[in-house]
Amino acid sequence: MGVFEQFNAPSLLSHYGCRTFIETGTGIGLSLHYAATLPFGELHSCEIDLGLAQAAKSLFQDDPRIHIHTSNSEDMLRRSSGRLACSGGHGPLPNGPSS
Image (cartoon, rainbow, N blue to C red; front, side, top):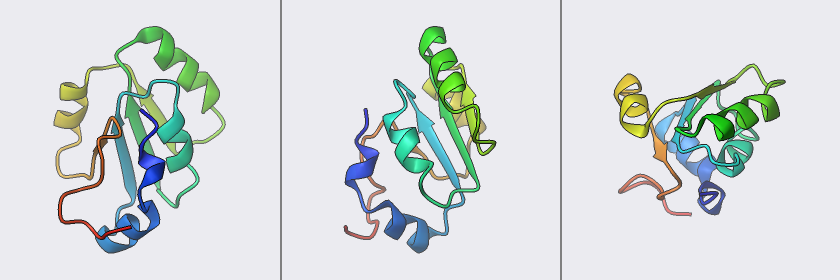
């Protein structure tokens, strides 16, 4: 979706103390690319399309913080219980700090 970069992510990281980025729907990696510029300790993204997942793994292979998972959103979010999720670029958390 590539929408994540439209929000004040540094403010969200600071406000919530986020260290892990979790995304559903890697696509071509726009949001993940932006998230990788921020001080996350780990970045996880899932993509159900095998071809897109493989392309993303190749694109981000040099960043050991980034993990591409080939799975659906439901499975990814279930495994990520208790962590902040930015799901497919649908916007910031409710009641989060404004940009």
